[in-house]
Image 1 (cartoon, rainbow, N blue to C red):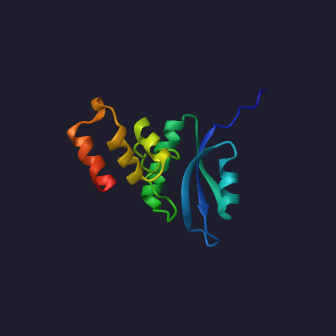
Image 2 (image 1 turned 90 degrees about the vertical axis):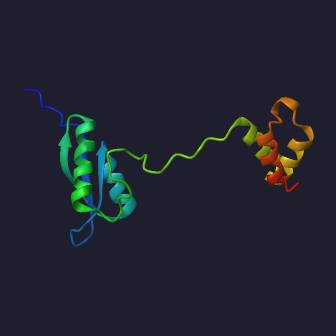
Length: 131
């Protein structure tokens, strides 16, 4: 008889030496082992799931009920806890590559083509360039 594989996703908890929950996470594969080593903490699998969405839902429940000190988010979002930064336009990247913002603004004011010289952009560059 063929042995069935365990379900691939699990929710785990990292624990203090006295058994308090430090962190609740969702993992698969060796995630728990990596986290235990990184945080130098004890860790246990709490539950296994066939579907990742079920594991995320359970992770959210465990975080809500345990309020672990190391969880920064409510869970259910993988490692995407931190807010996304606004992406810079290619123009902003080019200006920053030139050097200081003030110098870049002064150069823009001097050499920018007429089609880029909108009143709002002119005001913004004057403010940055100190002109």
